[in-house]
Each structure stands twice: as C-alpha cells, then as structure tokens.
Image 1 (cartoon, rainbow, N blue to C red):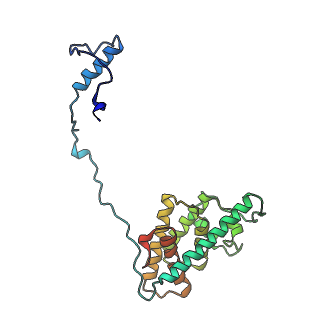
Image 2 (cartoon, rainbow, N blue to C red):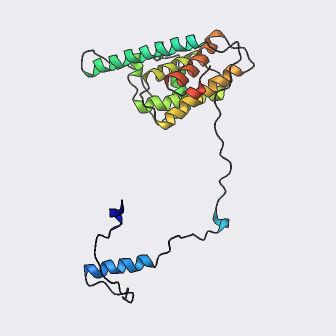
Image 3 (spheres, one colour):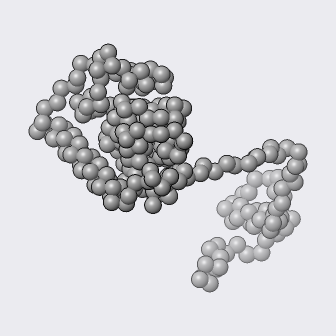
Length: 239
C-alpha cells in the first residue's frame, strides 16, 4: 500500500511567505496554498465546550419483554407450531386471492360500506370495528378495501385500545387477527414496535389475577405466539 503515499503532483519548493490574502495566479500556486494551510492545521482539535450548555439526557428506559405466563396458562410448543402453520396458510391463501384479483382472474367488488378516513382519530376507528348496527365484520371483502397505511394505523389503534382496557373483546380480537393476516412484510419499524406492544399487553392480561375465559386466553396466547414466532420477535416467545 506504499504507492498510496506517493504524491500525485510535483509542486517543488513551497514558499511559506505567500500572501494568502491574494488570489492564486495559477493552479500550481493554488496547490501550494493548500499545502501551507494544511501545515497550519493541528493534528488533533479539541472543542472547548461549556458544560452548562449541555442538556441532561436523563435515563433511557428499555422496554421489557413479555411477562412469563403462569404454568397453567402457558401454551405448548406443539400448539404454537400449529398456530404458526395455520396462520402461514391463511396468509398464503390471501396473497393468492390478491394476485388473482390483480390479473383479472377473479372478480372483486368493494362492499357498500363507509370507511373512516385514515386521519380520523382512534375513537372513530374503534367505533367502526365494534359497530354492531351495520354489522361490519373483518371479512376479506372488507379488508381488501384497506391499503397498507390504513392497516398499520388501525392495528396501532387496536393495540392501544387493548393496552388501555387490559382485555381483548371478541370482535377486537377478530380485527387484530385479520389485520395481521393481511399485514405486508417486511415490517416498518413503527409497526414492528406496535406488534411487540401487542405481545407485551397480552402477556400482562394473561398474568393478571382475574380469571380468563377460554376465548380470551386463546386470543392472548395466539397473539403472543404470532408476534414472536411468525413475525420473528423471538425474544418475546413463550418457551
């Protein structure tokens, strides 16, 4: 690598008395000025910082993993493997349907429903998902109306709702599972964080002292399983 040390230009003797306030008259003189200015620079420069101007960064809190399940509520590895396999098959089926619709092999007509705007707040979307008057269900026909931005936003609202309520209602669970089934990969960082929050919230619900019915226990175990084992957040997985 010694060849890299050889000078590219031969500039001859450098006159240190060059008046740097005047413009150079040739390319050679310009290069000599560069050499002179480089010699005047210190090899190491230390900034003089006033400590009083530095804001305290405070403590950075790291998010903990999932709360360990009580022994009687922890799912088996076989059960988790089956759920991941079943979920994978569902996502593959949905992907095939989308491809057939795009190439015109399968006809699809949007349902006659009024979707909230993506800029609407959490309450509006939660009301939409829970609204029994219009009997809006998370069917594929409905879900195909959602673009990826809406999927990610609604999923975030639902996870926040679960964290606040500390429970998973049946219909909320339906919507979360359906949105996970059509969620595109690779995950955006914010969406990945949202899924991790979902798994943590489910683990807190499961570890709560109140008695869970079979439906809610199955839901929390399922979401922890899918986030950890399908979406590869393995540090959150049940053993």
